[in-house]
Length: 94
Image (cartoon, rainbow, N blue to C red; front, side):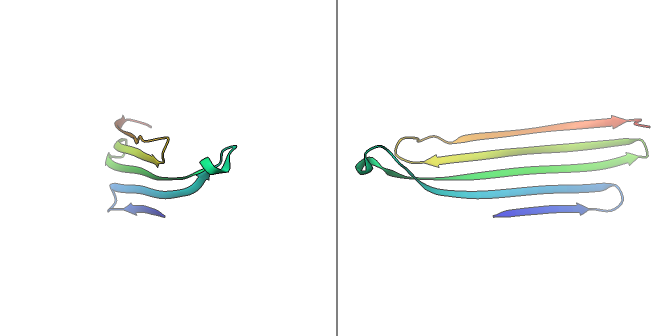
């Protein structure tokens, strides 16, 4: 499943967003078939960006994103979560 937003909010603001969801269903195959086990996991990815123009040569960009990876099986029981964000102020880029 994926979703994307790309929109201009007037002349000075633009937003962009993307979300992705993936469900994985497979099997861990071992040398002895009696010990095979199902594997499944879920991944969420998110990216956001907002740009605001203050003047012809000044703008601000706020962007961030993150991911959540959740493998769920008998031999891996952990969830990895990562997020980041940053702000950029650009002045006089002419």
